[in-house]
Image 1 (cartoon, rainbow, N blue to C red):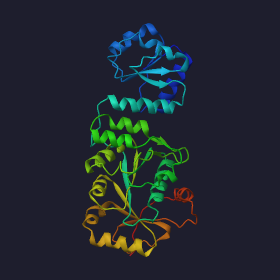
Image 2 (cartoon, helix red, strand yellow; image 1 turned 45 degrees about the vertical axis):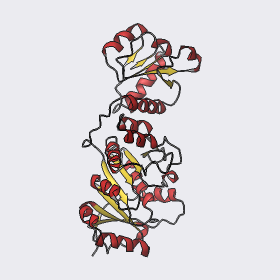
Image 3 (cartoon, one colour; image 1 turned 120 degrees about the vertical axis):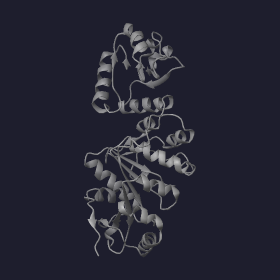
Image 4 (tube, rainbow, N blue to C red; image 1 turned 180 degrees about the vertical axis):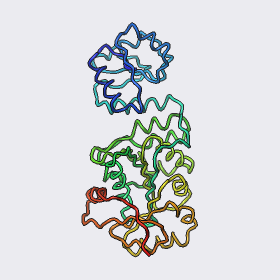
Length: 336
């Protein structure tokens, strides 16, 4: 509910919310202060944004998250016990603030089996093959196709900031909620994700500390993947090169697993070892796709389909990703 006597502001805010956030927020507007007590008493709103001067005129016990729309000249009317959000800022920032606050006071309604997104894990047994560049390019390609894409980096040290230069809110807030087993994880994900203006891909800011992701349990990682899958059409998971229990969990949850290699002897040798000697490959083979990056040869690995990506002559990873995002990513059969 938006409760304000500022008719122009209410019309603008409700219009943008209804047009761009209808999948998240159902909007009701109250422009008459006299009606507020009646609405708050019986309607059971999840959240209500109200002018500070209106706060004292209603019973907020039935509203899960009452919020004061703050502007500097109204500081004297602020109730310090009720959440405050700046009134005049980007509406996307208002929505992010509401969802972040809401996630802390609402129960987690996430069903582990209710994920909607197609999950694509991007992995390699070798470092330096362009895995993160491929993951970003694929995410950007899907976003250009009209999909709501969320990019999730679970590496110990992420290079995603090369592709997302604008700092978003840290993913550490999600990690903390998962560890504490309380709060609404999906609401928090919606609140802190940031959408890249150039590619249209949603992402999270880097962890506050590189150890934050390391202390997550394997169950936490599974919960993170499942929750992220519930807020997007396509979830792209950029993985570290290890093949441990955490990787196995991600493989199990994924619909497709892109295994990236390049023409180097080291990368091809590690790929061969993984496919011929590791029992994990046997379990994931049916959904594995070889991504032959930098014009690598597609044959030689017992993987049933492949995607060949060209060699882009540039040292700028962002430019390479942009060029690769124009590729079809169409899977082909492995050449004998």
